[in-house]
Each structure stands twice: as structure tokens, then as C-alpha cells.
Amino acid sequence: VAAACRRIEQGEEEPSLAELADAAGRSAGYFHRIFKAVTGLTPKDYAAAHRAARVRQGLEDGASVTTAIYDAGFNSSGRFYEKSTGMLGMTPT
Image (cartoon, rainbow, N blue to C red; front, side, top):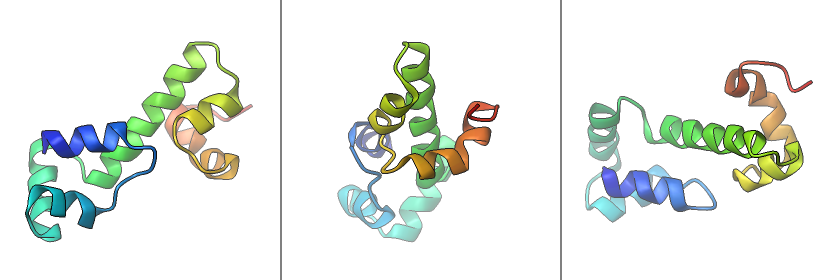
């Protein structure tokens, strides 16, 4: 699970559940259950939380919103803005 967390954190794009399970040598269903039991989150939720933290850190460091969005791994600004209120706790404006 720790290796999967590092893979999620270091990847440019979110790895699929199948990729993470294959790397761990487990079935997707079993890996999903173990990951959630250990971290309290699903792999997808873990990746989303990590991406949100990267955006917040980029904004705290003084990066422009666009730079922070793309550096965090969002493919488009629209994907960020649809999730931004929950991610940042405020509207984008």
C-alpha cells in the first residue's frame, strides 16, 4: 500500500486501480479493500486528496491559479473548477 501511495503521489497522471493492483501482485478488488483498510480512503480518493494538496501548496507558494492547476496534474481548468469549491473550501473567485 505504501508503494501504491508513492506511485500515486509521483505520477503525472492517476494510475488506474488495475495498474496499482498489478504492481502489488493482487486482484483489483482485493487491493482496493486492503488500500481502503490501511489508508481509510480508496485509491481514487487518495489521488484526489493528493492532487488537492498540490493545488493548495502551489497557490500558497504564490503560483498563478493556472500554473497551480496544471502542476497538480489537472488536464484542463474546467476539471479543476468543477471540483474547486470542495477542494479549496471556497469558490474559485
